[in-house]
View 1 (tube, rainbow, N blue to C red):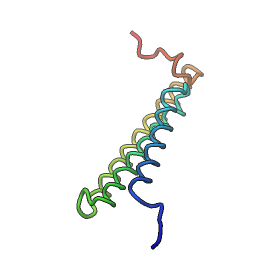
View 2: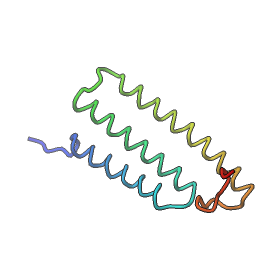
View 3: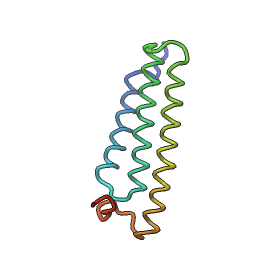
View 4: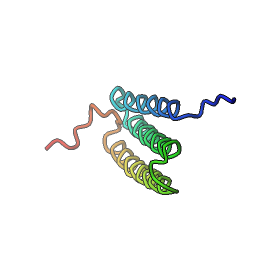
Length: 107
């Protein structure tokens, strides 16, 4: 009997670790670029858990789960493009990417 490390528990543990790293990056870091990368890591962790549930439990029949994951990846790419455009604009105006020192939205 073969033992494999590719099971639902290990996939969910990996997903939880990735999501925790992403949460730590969003909470603890001040650089906007690091925050955007941490959000991407969190979205990838959600994709991993979604596909793990689909693969092991047949949560959604057929290839429908793959379509949802592709949709999440497309939303993440759009979020990254908009976030990087905002980051470049903020850096050109303020010469700083520290999220604590920005007061752009204050009236």
